[in-house]
Length: 574
Image 1 (cartoon, rainbow, N blue to C red):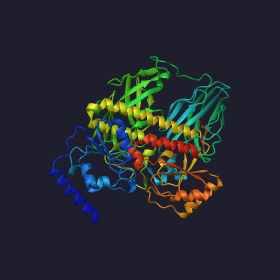
Image 2: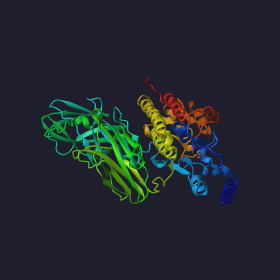
Image 3: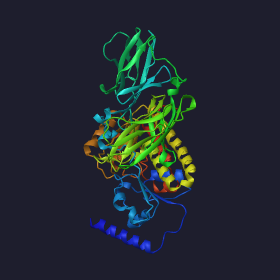
Image 4: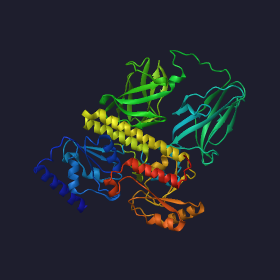
């Protein structure tokens, strides 16, 4: 406590001296300061030529033990924008950085606010499949007879879309794309032992269809004309963890709803573009749909504040859906997803919607495109954060969210909006730079997906500190480490090390992972006992000093890690 008081007194004294001694040398470019390497590099990619960018932490230093001195604090207070990763890893930011003590224009951006943070109990390190994993974020049924087209998906307690009608004797082959709590993709096994898909009759079996199960897909065969109802199940380790609502299977000529109006056939229901636009910021895009999930996030609002949001919608064939002010022909609507906890109030205005903060908390909403009064498409759910609510403030939190490329995209979009606010005269260039970089991050994500789909092993044995849970969860890789908690100072128990050695010997594991900038003692012990070769990863919070000076980037680190995973998990792709 005495140390903190002395530091605060020094900060106050230095600030007074700085204020009396003259202003910082005049420079037209705003000063942006970052606490960790990922946000440093993201800001550099978006606006490097337009800002004075400073990395607060010395290269090669761990953020877990870092706290800036009084002089550095003064520099931060005099900056225009401070980017930090959140109070979990950098608790000194809210304690030492009070914008009211420095220049009035300092903005502090917490890049964890739009990230779904993992608690230790959520971490993949020991394949924790607790009850929170039964929350299904995405359940899509894929038509294997039509290049895995998404035929229907679960929206809340009902289906959007429908299964294709089949004739008597015809067989429908269906797979599924399943994402459970926290964005964890459930890769289905061909034998269904770990993760599988099943289908069963709902209600009375009238002999209309025959069903067959094949682990990662199912078959529905038409037996007699009529309509049957079925439910799909996700199974994990032989247990049913989730069952869908029932959905119809039509066999034969039983479609009573084939009328076509205004040439809006089923092709038009395929959405090519769905972007949410912030009308308070000149229609700037704040989030958009990519496949079955969102990129970006909605702006946080305070209690009593209202978000005004529009949409840019393009349906099948590049058909732009111009929204009407009354929403009669084409409109956008918003509704609560799940339980209404009174966090927000929603209002519909045809071509835009309002979301008003009512009480601090987090609500989930879905947006819909309506055509001639009918809902033609509904988005996945997206969070609305009201006030200073932090639903991450319980349990032991994993702060290493930047190691997931999808989270990196969220960070880039948040940084972009802060930089646009700082440099409105360069908005077009900033958005162009950010969009180009987002494409690179998306390519990185696709390459990790490809790696995961083409490896023999699906378990990472890690002897470094517990920093890769988000990436492991994203790509459904089991993550075994002897450490508990997320600090580099955490100590593994002898029993955990012994268990890892036994497991590696039992399965003849040839490669072990560790990381740069942390102690190698545990990894060296494991390697010595098992004969495994150590493969080194970047945790990316910081960079080795020589590599920082040489200009290493976040993408360099992530692609290096990708190649290491390919070696350690025995990649067999091309």
